[in-house]
Image (tube, rainbow, N blue to C red):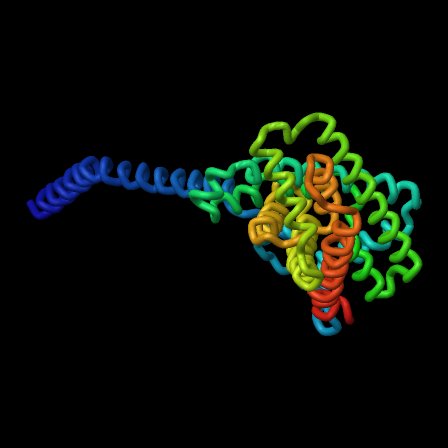
Length: 338
């Protein structure tokens, strides 16, 4: 009986173990499935994150004490704009290129720059300048319109075509001279050829605009004549200081255009400084080489002496002063002395 009792107990335990295994099988299966799902989810998540993560760049740091140490760092995205010290170096490199340029090329590109600035000045005269009702009702808005529509387009065309604009060349060549990367003879040659080319190009465009009757409308003609008369009536000192303020902004526009390689960046860098100087009524010598002769052709009672003594000469001197002191001089002191 004892033996039969033990056998019965063992049999009962076997039955219970079998039932437990059957009962627990679904639970184990479920746990295995869940573990598998977690692994698959983690794998997909890693792949997704890896696809959109910023690339890691392997950089090697070498020094006298630690060589061959590899550091993994996230590469920062590089922007389009150069930092100011690099822009100054670009200005000086541009001065070297201009110094080595064939004189006839400088003269021809100077002619182009004068004509292109003249186109911008003509656009300003025939749009914002020829809006007397707006000028009467809202002079501030009219001034902004004259600044925004016209000369920014002219300087943009100069920059994009590589034309030789005297007012910008003052800043560029002086930067090269201060850093001893160009000689005085090269500076004088560039200034003389670009200035002469600008003057001829601006006057030629004035004759072309007059021949095309671009100011035939009464409002446009009145604007053209009024602008020329006003500019040729400025006191010498006023014209000089207006020239200073103007070319400070113009050269910063050229500086900004040199800081970027994109066309959109150049356009934006030029727009605000040039809009500001026109809206504020400052004086640009090359633009005036078009505006005053064009006004004279359209009937303004201005003599060549009035044009030269009351505007072109003092404004040119002011343009040179601004480029020399406030742009080339300041940035040489900040970035070019080392």
